[in-house]
Length: 242
Image 1: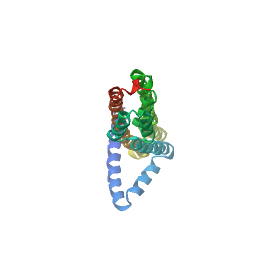
Image 2: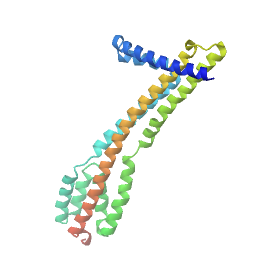
Image 3: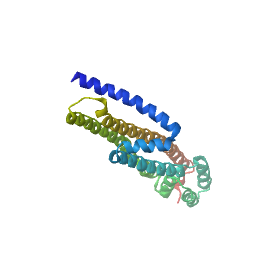
Image 4: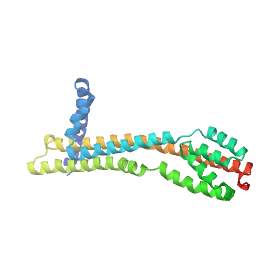
């Protein structure tokens, strides 16, 4: 058993070195696209196809979230300045129109707060907090699926690894002989599925972290702007009018 384990480990090392050498030579002669395509096919269509699907769906969600978050970014100082100008004149409807014509979650929260302004400052605060939670949920939409693909891709790769090792041991059992040539194909499939699964997870993880940091920035901006709106309502005593 120890000899068999040592042989498999030795075969893994030899195969890794050979794969790296072949990949380097292949990239020089074939080009990266051809090399990636060839190794993708060698890894087996079933698991590699599912891993590729995880990458495509994950990238689609990530790109959609990035575009949406960029559109949700608002110049808060400019919006506050316009709202303050209207509120200083007691023009609540004008301030609401400014918020309605401005895109982004901050403007939406402002509108909800100003819509309840005549019910008192406490109601304005509660409205802002409640609608802020709704906007936060919209910002985080799709992140659960992106997180799923990040976890699923390497797990599929590891499953391919296990099946490749099973295939290698099955070949040894059928042949009744222990030689690197028998286990090479199974180990090769195992290594390729693992590598591709990890690459997909790394790519999607980078996008995920960027999106989370973007959401944190928008949420902090929402909280600061909400406090400023309540201060404006209190300052100009808008809640006591009308």
